[in-house]
Image 1 (cartoon, rainbow, N blue to C red):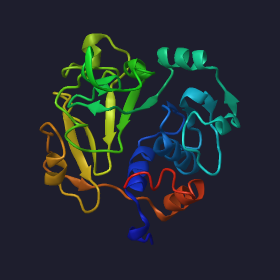
Image 2 (image 1 turned 90 degrees about the vertical axis):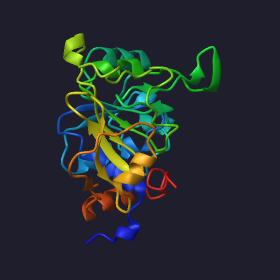
Image 3 (image 1 turned 60 degrees about the vertical axis):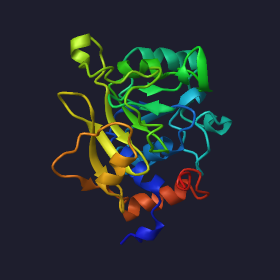
Length: 259
């Protein structure tokens, strides 16, 4: 029996991402990816032992460090099954070899487009981000999961100021555009889990985390979410999953990253 008071918001996010991974898949993530790294390790230790994950800019393939390190570019990750040079990683991303790409952004819109470039007009920026990095390749991955450690109207806006990571653009279907991937499949935040409605490709609420209502999620979103007839409560980790999270992350780098 899991003591619910021990479960953090990040644990629930990790659980949602973990259960979105399948055995035998190849997944990749960016630099600030403690939660996806933890989700990938828990998946490997439970339902997806043949999952392969690439830790971002380090190029490390299946690092199994204990404890978890704070960045997927940490030099300690070089203790792994193998290390890919950065040009190989970029080439790999562009050749539709990735089953799932973990992505995020300064802004995320109703169609899953992500912005890591800047807030405001490009020539008169209010805030400069890290740039496109690997996000232009999102459309070439089998699918991608969006995760963010904030959920508010500044992050979730109707239309991003700059598309550095393409979602469903203005609601277009990938097969109509001749794009090889299938687009964003999941959005995980500190308060909810969303997916995308099949016809309009607009973001749809799937579940709310314990103690959060659908109305509260909508209030914190800068556009109208599609609301299904039934909104469930987000899955919390099993005792086994929580034990692995604690073992992998004893210092709370991921588990306590959301206040």
